[in-house]
Amino acid sequence: MVELILKNILEFKEFICLSGIVTILFAIIMPLMIQRFDYRQGKQSLLFLLYQLDRKGILMIAISILEFIFVVSAIVFQKDLTIAYGIVFIMMAGILIICQMNIKAILMEVMNTLLIFITLVLGNIMFRYLQEIQFDVSVMIIYVTLNIFILLYSFYVCIQHVMGCLKKG
Image (tube, rainbow, N blue to C red; front, side):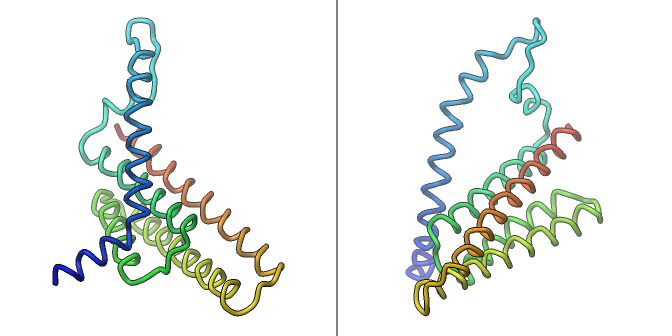
């Protein structure tokens, strides 16, 4: 049982490393943002907006960023999308759904999650086709275009979550 759990955790080593790198970058950038913050002179930054958030808003922003990092790691490292990937992606979407108690937001979150995950699976199928069956330039162009779309759309969804949280806070 423990071996199965460790095997599934090791499937996400690239995602874990990428999340660690992003966390270290935030740890380096945040002190620089704090130095520029001065409420007396009206210099407000993103940090000022983050101070106004409640725990639910902070959780939503963190999960949205993790979801974006998850998509980036799935595209960059081209791992086989196993059931474990689907479960983790659905869990992150589930946390976002729980945080949003609005029917419209829940429906949008379900649609966004389905769209992103289905396009990730399609990209994975195209990558395996190019690798194992036949390399075709037209399929490669579609594959690259699909990956750019996935990255841009997941970034858009992440920004929408952050902006939604900042407007509420």
